[in-house]
Amino acid sequence: MAQYHSRMTTSSPPAPHAPPVDRSPLWGRIGALVVMALIFWADAITPMGVAVPVLYVAPVLLFMLGGYYWEPLVVAAGSTLLIIAGAYLTPPGGSADAGTINRVLETAVVWISAGIIARYRRTLARWGSQYEADRTGRARSLQQLEEMRQALDQAAIVAATDQRGLITYVNDKFCEISKYSRDELLGQDHRIINSGYHPQEFIRGLWRTIANGEVWRGEIRNRAKDGTYYWVDTTIVPFLNEQGKPRQYLAIRSDITQRKQAEAKLVEQSALAQLGQLAAVVAHEVRNPLAGVRGTLQVLRSRSATTDGDRGIMDAMIARLDVLNNKVEDILRFARPRSPVLEVVDVKTVLADAASSARAAAGPSSPEIRLPAAAPNVSGDREMVRDVFLNLLLNACQSGSTSPVEVRTTEDARMVTVDIADRGAGFGEHDPERLFEAFHTTKKSGTGLGLAIVRRLVLLQGGDVKLLARDDGPGTVARVTLPSAPR
Amino acid sequence: MNSNLSCGEFPGVRAEIHAGILVIDDEPLVRWSIVAGLRHAGFAAVGAGSPEEATRLAAQTRPVLALFDVRLWGTDPVRLLQEIRTLAPNCRILILAVEGQDLAVPTWNGIDVIRKPFDLHAVVERVETVLSRPAHGVRMAV
Image (cartoon, rainbow over all chains, first blue to last red; front, side, top):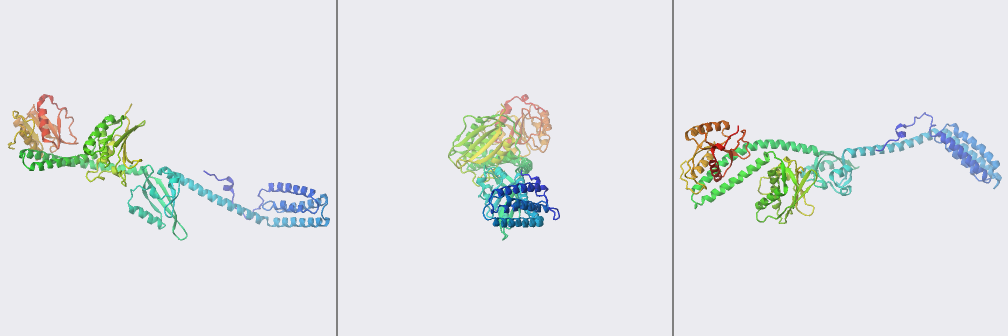
């Protein structure tokens, strides 16, 4: 942080009637004596007729900005004596008449300048202080501006763009939160951090507002370079040129990611609680009659002749009832999962088990699943861990690619990370966070609960799950982290 | 329910067992299908649609096994169970419940649960398994 110099904070504009004697008069007086001595010495060694004594104007001028009014006159008097003394000491040379005329003229010049300075030194001093005040004032404004900028940079995420929306300035906090370097951001437009979350109309409304010269305020979700999301409370201020058209936009943002996450969690929890109650009632009300219908169909089927064509119909009905029941079960598992029973889970075994089920479910065209040779243990609920892997492996097998699905595990002090990577089309323009929302599906059939259940189960076990784009070509990486098993 | 079912459709048919089985459920189709399935497998099964009917039939038939839905009209299932045990001391119990449903009873220790919806063949198999065990091996811890 820059500091004010104390001189700047204490100086005030000079009062018109105050004697302007404060501009380092002591140094002015000493300087005048020294300069006069030097001039006298120079005069004494140069031949007659050389106009050295005119330099006695210099000590007079030293009182231009300060000192008492009589001081330049005293200097002029002193100078006159020295000029006369010089006339006797100077070695002969040139014309003696010219030397005398010179010395008279020089004395006159010294006295005239001393007179002017004695008369106008107040005005001159005022001009001087005025000039100085302007200069320090400008410096102070600049400094204040700089300090404001520094304070803003500490407090907020700041970016400036030109009228086309190209980034011309970003502060460190902007780089920090977006995880882009300054060089990567400058010259880009804000699409670089667009998360695709907000509808077109929202973005258009923003631009309409600021292009009209009005301030825009709102909450925006952005995407950092590593694919994570952050929420910012944003104020965009347009600055206009002489024609009233925006010249540049200054965007000041603050990070509200945590608040947004807390809000989303609250909404989700209350929705889940209600859904849970609803699901429990619906599940019973649906499954009880479903059980009756299924049982009855089985009895009727067994009573009909083996050759009866209706048997096929009844088999199909039973199969549909089972599908229906599975969907109800999905909803129930999502809405009311049981509490996890934590134990040490051998990830390698569970992965192998889930992989064989996933391949069986994905059918004969399923890609191969490459499992790691060894995997660390996690602390979790065996059933739930298996469900999570099964779901993600099945998604990976159904990604549309025939390249093998690769599973890798890594471990740090606290967490075990399991990456399930496919070579499918990836999630493209879909927002990977939204894919975890309940009833959000990109498949033609399905309840859209698969990933929602996965996330719920993982969170219940103190872990996390993310979908990432592969960095080595097309494809998706599903990354599950679960707490390491205690050693 | 007149049983003119052809044998062989359900596995494990034991025509010689004529043990009485009581099926207690308020959903008529559940009751009917289980009764029909059990009769087809050679058991003497009757269905009860209410707790009153259940106690009446328990007194009449002295069943060796009762299957019942714990969510029966908000009845206290433990009391109903105890009443049936009093009327038929050797009666074994099989619970019918929907998946994920809390059984709302202290401990159904040693008592099997059939989840709804069920496969009828599986129900018959479970009934046979339970009947092959000695009755006193089943205790309810309350």
